[in-house]
Image (cartoon, rainbow, N blue to C red):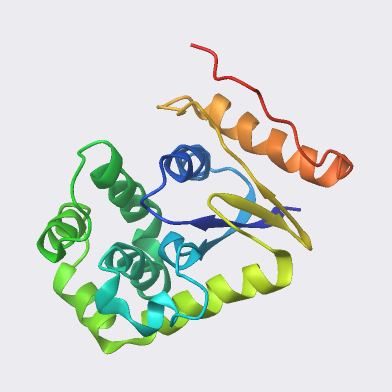
Length: 200
């Protein structure tokens, strides 16, 4: 029986990139997990109290665009999602592209093998903003999620920062995610375990 869990993402976060690369590498190699990728907005976490939500003023937050594109691919082109998801993270963190730029997002989508025009037309239709708002609000209100990547198993949610990237190491990627899931499922008493300095 496959393990079911949810993981949040926002393409701007390098730790989300690390965590999702482990997921993607393992899934592409056939890992037996049922993963739900859930959009989250770091822009929204910085909105001042009393101001409209980021998805109610999208013109103020151009960084939403790439996450909206990810939602469209996930929901309309699911067979392409893993590949595109990796490409959007790489564009931001490996290529240092400004993913607030519509042309650069379009170029990344095209190079990843999806029709950028079709994806961006769906973004312009408005429904991905509603999805982003609903998914973000749900995990914040229900589970007090505050960042990415957060792993959610049932009613347990854990914010995870991985320092390494798996590269092509499927065994490392799979064991890393299995270890995270094992801690969530078997040791809920562990509330925080954080190194005071990053080893060099």
